[in-house]
Image (tube, rainbow over all chains, first blue to last red; front, side, top):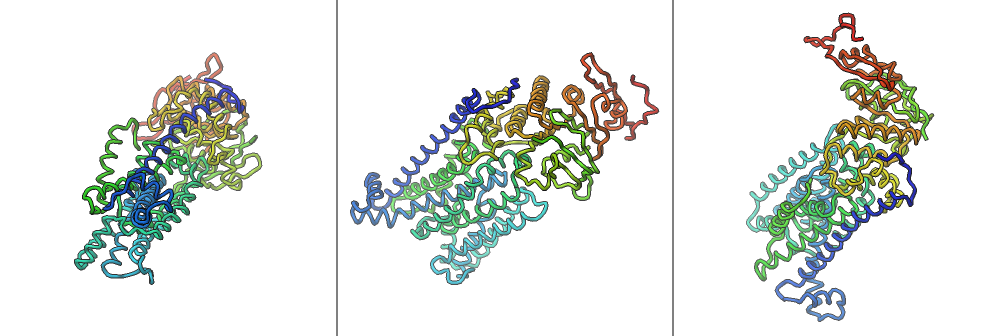
Length: 359
Length: 275
């Protein structure tokens, strides 16, 4: 062993440090670039599919130069298909980022908006509006279902948040509590379905299957704003969140206030997941698998893990949207069903061909 | 640079169970290695956690003249490098990334050349450069421990607290790592406390000893004054022979447990002489 332990910026160790770092990050930038390109392609493909077939180039040109496109094409691309396609991207990204940070702060590979009961609570809130017409916030208007879903999703998060501030509550307890909430809200939802009229029941089932059909520009705007507000919270904490994966004790020894970090991130994650679920219904799988795909591709340096999770989630939901349009031409399958059908084979192939341990 | 670590009447309890009972330490010198020894559950890890600012004990811990609890978390982290006992790590991070994390207090989103240089240097010093691109969750226990030691060194602390840093290492690595730690401690004038179970290893590398038992300090001083058959019987409850080899290094040879079948410790007067 070498006993020098003296460093200067241009020493051999500086050069070797830079070389190793470039080797590590270079590959990750490449993966990020490739995924972004793939996402752009699926977005255009998604927009091109529908009852009126449009060519990929035609769509790309209508997106880049709307003024030069034919009126019909412009209306189809910008007013009808773009909101749905973009909603898939934004919601996919939001769910995957929420899942990634939940897995990080709870140190649990099974954590996702589903695990903590956030999706189940949103489902119950939506059903309350659809079956009984009950609004938890007056004058919600056209946003009645979404607002109800959001409020209940936040209620679930708040419950977990408040309990997690109690002394002696471990992350295992938090996960168990989340699972208990899943059962609670699933039972309440089943109760509402039991007493619902046939028409309301159909609406509830449709909502819980998840759908992009009701995507509008204002909803996309809100989802973007929420992403814009919450993601910087995670960005500011990238090193702390990465260090958390070294184990709680190591993180503490690096001067991280683990408890505060967990609670801080939990709040942001809850808002992100609640908004995503409120707008499109309970779309599972993306929040769980998006982060795992990212972990396999770029590891857990959050500077890369965070954007890769977002893009992987967006890509999964965008691909699911494409498949949902393609199964039966002219009809639209609920995306919640398709997500798992598309995602599971893809995820399995990644797991079976992986060269390193996933968690 | 920290020249003095002083602990005065330190006590700590987990709930109603007292772990540390009035610990005072004043003879820890910079540039020297202090071995903190004692049987399981003597309070060594809790003491280290208190010194690292992770627990809030009663009593006083001072770095030079500054009270630790009044220094603020960031200041403590910058000065004190604490290596916890090795726990399970399943992070999908490369060894190099793990080392950079140890320097996170100096980093923004971008990683500076200086941070890269320090990480590269520590990998070389510990002779684990070949592990740079390996993922932590693929390493053996010993390799993980080497990375943890590297993380503490990469932080360039003024006080090092290493809790059983060699427990997973093979014989050769144990000697090499402790040799490196001794050299770093001397060169940088650090205050280094190492908790060790292997008393012969401690005798070879430590300049000073603090013996703990049942949350108290039993004795402190150099090997000759601390590593005695009486201490081994009282603290470790073993009968052992102690001799000094040709290089002047104390060697401990455990012979038998001093605990009788009913759990009581045989009194010193009933034991045969081991000299």
